[in-house]
Picture 1: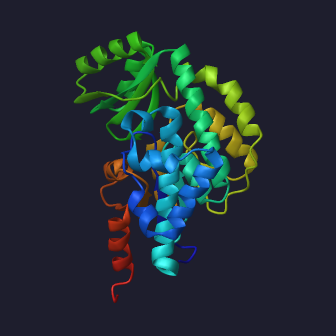
Picture 2: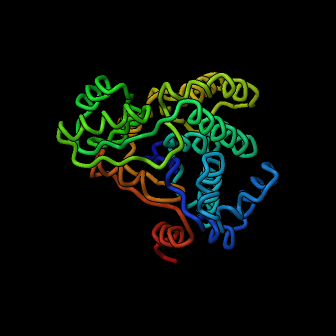
Amino acid sequence: MSELSKVAYVFPGQGSQSTGMGVDLYDRYPSARAVFDQADASLGFSLSRLCFEGPDEELTKTHNVQPAILVVSIACLKAIEEAAMANFPSPSFVAGHSLGEYTALVAAGALDLEDAVLLVRERGRLMYEAGLRNPGGMLAVIGLDEETVKDISLHSGTEISNINCPGQIVISGATQALAEADKLARARGARVLIPLKVSGAFHSALMEPAVAEFSKIVSNIGFKPPSIPVVSNVTARLLTDADSIKEELVKQLRNCIQWQRSVEYMMQGGITTFYEMGPGRVLSGLLRRINSELQTFNISGVEDIAQLVSKENPTN
C-alpha cells in the first residue's frame, strides 16, 4: 500500500492470553512456525508447547506470559503476510499496549525477535520480583472520567497506570490503598470495578525495584531505528531512534500507559483502520470506545486470516 495508508497495526498486552493460542498458526503457516521455533531456540525451552498446551497456571506466570503473547502476536503478523502476500495493507504506524510495545518494535524492525523474547522474559521476572518486594495490584475503574480518577488516586495513595479509553482507567497501588480507592470510586459512582489478575502494581512507583536492573539489560540490547513509525506508550509520540526506545522501555515500567492518547495521535495522523494482531480482542474493544467510526479487524488465528484474505481478494 502507498505511504498514504490509513492503517495501523496494534499489539495486545498481558491478559490477552489463552492456552492453545497460536497452535493453528503453527500447524498452517511455515512463517508462523519459524517464529515459534526461533523463540524456543532463543529461550532454551519450548515456549511454543506452553502456549499450545499450558498448563494455565504456568502460562500465566508473568515471566512466561509476556514472551508468549509477543511470540503469538508476531506469528499472527507473519502468517497474514504469508497468506495475503502483497495484498495486505502496510501500516503507517505500529503501537502496542504495555508488553505489546515490544511486539510493535519487532514489527517495525527496531528489535530482533530473539532479543525481544529474552528481554520481555527478564521484564516479566523483574516485574514479578518487584511485586514481591512491594505487594500491590491493579484495579480497572469503569464509568468515571480521568479527572475524577485522578482525585481518587490522590486521596487513596494510588496512581493512574493505564488510560485505556473514555471511561476505562486502571489504577495501581498497594493492597490497602487499592481498597481505599475502591471505596472512593464506588462513592463517586463508578459503574464497575475490576481487580486485574496481575502479580503487582504495574506501571507505578511500586515497580521501582525493577528499574535499575532492567535499565542495564536494555542498555545491552542492539536496537535499530524503526522502519515503521512506532507510537510510544508513555508520551503518545513517535519513537525514532535507539536511545529514545531504550529510555521509553525503562520509563514504561513505572509510568502510565497512555493508550487512548496513542490511538488519538494515530487518528490525527490519518488512521481510520486498525488491525489488532495477537491473542484476544481487548484492543479492538478499546478502539471502538475511543471512536466508534474506526474500522477494526482481529488477527488471532487461521480463521481470522482466511476471512481477511478473502476480503482483500474478493475474486478468489
